[in-house]
Image (cartoon, rainbow, N blue to C red):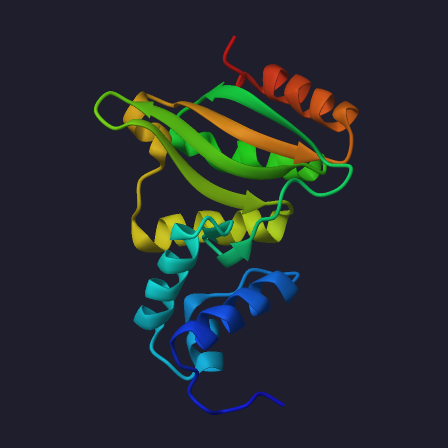
Length: 177
């Protein structure tokens, strides 16, 4: 049973961190706000304060995630890709269908330098939720700022899966070479 008392200040931030660390799934700002009996904006401020302390919390399209160092046994690789926005769905589904976690997208902006956005999709459902959110909000893909050129950090249980993913990207014409 969730305690319905309003959590205050540092106690609330500690509890938010505990909820994030304990969750197997992303938690939205609204979910955290309801649990803490505060507004979503208060939660956004708390998350900002926790991040400022160096706590690895990532905001994804599905909600907030506590990101400890790479999972035991997980291997990561950064790949350079290029394609128009209309092929983003194909790229993401290709990767998640191979068992790859697409952690982020990065671009090099001429003014701001490196820009990174968390994606954190590892299956078709999460990929479709991400794409639906882009469509619903009318948001642009970061890669639209660089004529389709972007990087992804990919994660999998073994290097062979990442090798297969890289080959599939190459065959689809998405891998920048």
